[in-house]
Image 1 (cartoon, rainbow, N blue to C red):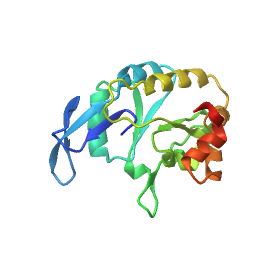
Image 2: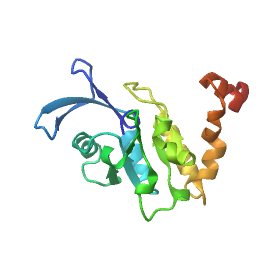
Image 3: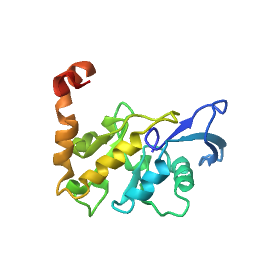
Image 4: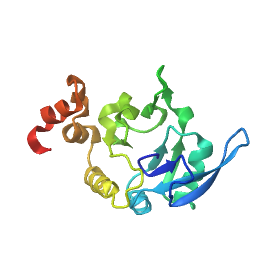
Amino acid sequence: MDETLIHCNESSAVKSDVTLPIKFPTGQLIEAGINIRPYTIETLKELSQYYEIIVFTASHSCYANVVLNFLDPENQYISYRLFRDHCIQTEEGIFIKDLRVLENRNMEEMLIIDNAAYSFGFQIENGVPILPFYDNKEDRELLSLRNYLMGVRECRDVREINKRMFRLGEMGGFQEPEEAVKGLFGDCF
């Protein structure tokens, strides 16, 4: 959710698309400034016709539910929500989203989209990386994502397509990001 569909501003001085009231379990109420990634609603609307959309976020439910209720007030697009307490936390404090919490679903049919590849580290072949969003109103990442997802929707095993497209499983053999990009994709970049 965060940096994929929206960005939450930490300061109220930063211009936001919308301000949402977030009430924490402690009773504290804050006004969260939210920037919504361009094409978010259109993408959710279109993809929900072909996919079961599940938002799996490392955020707390008290915050995420308010944002998701704003994005999908009639619960038309998002079928299910998973939060921080559904993640696995590493010793370093990193939250990993393990798709095995989604029972009665086949791994070959699931994709996880995230701006942080470590988030889908347990199922790297199910992962679709996306550039992080903060406030760029010219951002077109969701249009590219939508095209990719529409292209793989009839595949028997999306992991095979992801392996060829993103080659994330091969990244571990390089010391530096620049070395990985050049080694995997040549002079294309």
